[in-house]
Length: 173
Image 1 (tube, rainbow, N blue to C red):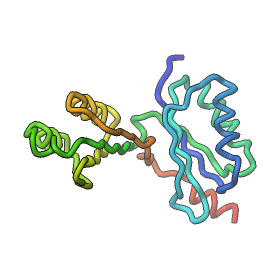
Image 2: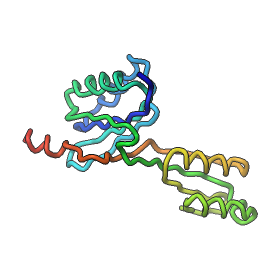
Image 3: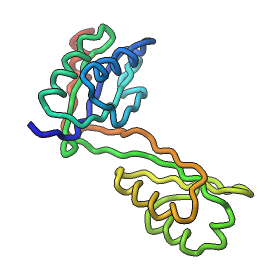
Image 4: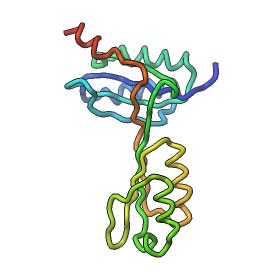
């Protein structure tokens, strides 16, 4: 079996220590987590982990099974990229003078569908939301001008198919 990128969605109670135990499952199998995001979900008092890994389907099935054995975990799912809609967000901090002195910077911002979120005396910040490749492309275009700071979020995603988690929770209550 060949390696693919999988997005794992984990619905759980929000308890201390769960993230540590989940990351331990990947550590034991020597599988690197490419991206991790934890947030509230569409269900009250339920958190959602979005974990991105590159592995085989057999391994991702084993991992999801191990994650579901955690007491706080309600349900875990995995999807390939074609089954999800996903984005990342990034912030770029750039020296302010470049915004006015380098016309090309303004063109890069416009062409990449980015936006300026703040301008200060010494710097301005660009925000970009999109696929990883789009963010990497913007990074490469801005790099020659000097990036003071750069940060990218983990993947956020929703599945194209209906998630049965709400039905499952209704049955449990």
